[in-house]
Image (tube, rainbow, N blue to C red; front, side, top):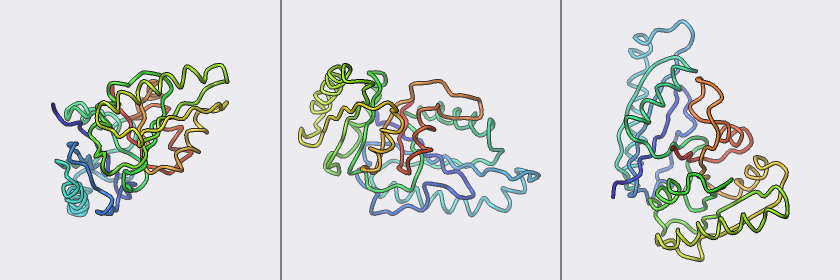
Length: 240
């Protein structure tokens, strides 16, 4: 069985995911990691000028990150591009994700140890992709994997619990200890706010995207952006 591929955008000149603490990058032997470096060109600067002035700096950071992921057990590769922010960057990210057959994208705040993971689910979409990705995690490094659903009202709680209980049983079949996988259903009128609040208790969020991208300038859809605007936690977004 092939390993899940995790695409990690590293957007220069100030990447969110850098610097890395090597002590936090553990238990990643179940993944292939692709570091996608992209230097956003300031207005008026050509690719040639940026590459001549910044390539060595960017490569040094990317290979430092690659070494940290490799020490954590992941097979790691590096790519570096220079271009304009917006649609050009989003299109290139989409192309690289397709070329590398990326299963998920890691974005957001500096990476900490993936020991306390939140998995918010709106419905059963992305379930197969979710199980495949989570199965790549080192269960010995995780002390909490919380499956979380926001119900629109009390009448929807039972259905939400049934959905999460079914997923929990499948994860246990994939060798997650029963006492690690938790199920939580809460009633809230703003699912995005509830997820962002819950995420502050965790050091990684794994989520699927359930809506179309709002524009060609965006690589990911609104579910990720709604969350990212409210919480400062690394996020893995699953791809279809």
